[in-house]
Amino acid sequence: QEIRRQLWTEVERAVALSEALGGHYRFKIEEGYPAAVNDTNVNNWMRKVVRDLSGEEKVLNTESGMGAEDFAYMVHEVPGAMFMLGAATADGVWRAHHTPIFDIDESVLPLGAAILAETARRFVTGALISPQI
Image 1 (tube, helix red, strand yellow):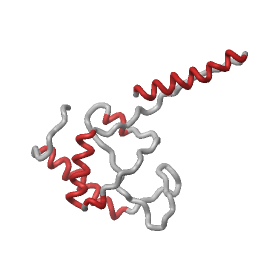
Image 2 (cartoon, helix red, strand yellow; image 1 turned 135 degrees about the vertical axis):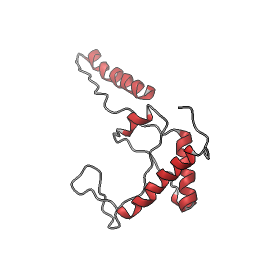
Image 3 (cartoon, helix red, strand yellow; image 1 turned 180 degrees about the vertical axis):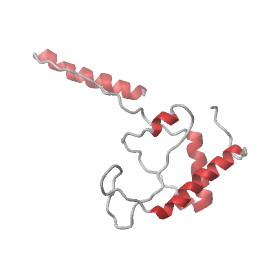
């Protein structure tokens, strides 16, 4: 959030230079969704569960996207983590969310449910060290 506000300040400063050249500007920010930040502990727990259930090769390190995500509101309240399950269809067509052609390979859903359930089980049984909530 701090970086977001810094960026807004810097963009406004850059645009304000137009006034030195006789121009005018109107700068309006619509804040939208907050940044979604995974909790390191929860993220590491889930990575371990994936390794245990599916093997090391199933844990991929990928870049985060810049899309809006309402999950961000949840992780601002309690520690959490979002992961990508890897449910792309085998036909190679990019089927983005919120589009008329959205589709997933539903055969991976049981694995996703197992990852969440096993992470929760380990948390409630004390098999994982809990973060301060």
